[in-house]
Image (cartoon, rainbow, N blue to C red; front, side, top):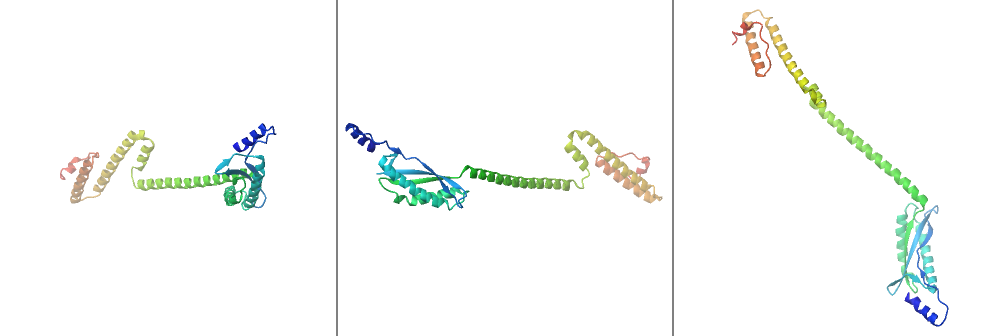
Length: 256
């Protein structure tokens, strides 16, 4: 600012016309072709001018041609670089462009030492295509994850059922156990059914023994069977099962 202000004050004192104010160094936007020239990248160039280690924010009118020459050189390098990349790869194009601009920064000198930085973007049309492609890829990944989860869940359920069926096979109380698992309030009814089944089983067992005894006619064999029936009745009593009375308890007298 002082570089421009001092000459202006001098001209005012000498009644000379004022010079033009300094020009800001603004970013510059250009369209740079992508590979195949079907689409253009949108490139924004940021120029930095330094002198004596200090950065200049604005330029005097006689310094503008130098800034324009730097811009023209940078545009040439940008167009050559971006043509090497597909329109769908702005990141790679930006990196290569900045590497090239940095490589030539030493040759862009005059009153100032210049550095140029580029930002590379794609047009809205390509941006929308990228959105659509990303959405499709996301749907594919989501569907694949859902399918894998379905397979895993189905296999876990299958294994649980397989373990369950393996456990219950051969169990006499499976039906009652399943009823209780589904409807615990059926417990009194199920207990009554189990007691009734045990009583019926004991009665059938004694009936079988009685029918066998009736088939034997000899006294010795009859005594043998009476003794065995006594043992059987004692066993049922130890198990806590009800034992129906004999029609004629005198048969057991000799077995005791």
